[in-house]
Length: 296
Image (cartoon, rainbow, N blue to C red; front, side, top):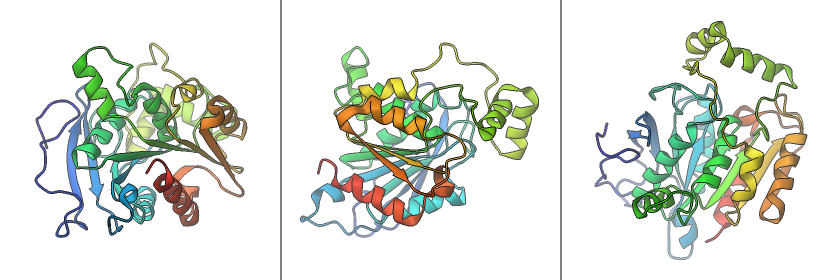
């Protein structure tokens, strides 16, 4: 574990593209801007880099899991394994999940967790970062891209601009994300709200799902995904959603796509359910290929 500045770890002497360490995963704890420790893993990937594919050679995916997931869950590791065929992968456990510290704020402060992971990916030597989020993580990658601009324009001061710019994404993939907050239109979402808002629900979350949930309500209410999407341009954006998603019906991805306008792309997947559990290897391969093709 590093005791360095928030959002950073001690710089490793291991370079991700060296021949001797290409297949060696790295694991560390990062520190967010608000002081939470985030368990994070780097998988160098299977791509053999050469001068004919400089854009792919610099690419790293930063994977943001869904609510109650963590970096070691089998469904998250399956996503990592599929994406390593297209580039390196950083995955991490959101606050309140797995070995990370803190408590889950269900998509609000989690933007800081993702920012710390993106900064680490760049510190490891990657020039291009594609953030890929699922469900809650899908909302987080949208809000993160809106709040962490490449020019650092959302924060005043030179140090703040440099820090926020280092945490920006170069391509964004949001899978199975909600468009708006407080949605209770499906049975799974009504159960989730009970889990988050009721003391007995938070006990179930802690001991049944290994997820520690903060008891405080949002104050203020964070920028919603659909409000965030117009601020992402010109960063490439891909929205992926299944037509059998049991949590969020198709009006959610359509709202996001409409808000994105010409800079967003929408894939509505026939027969697909919700988030990591429902994403097949073929779809993950298409997502990886899409990210590789962006901005080389």
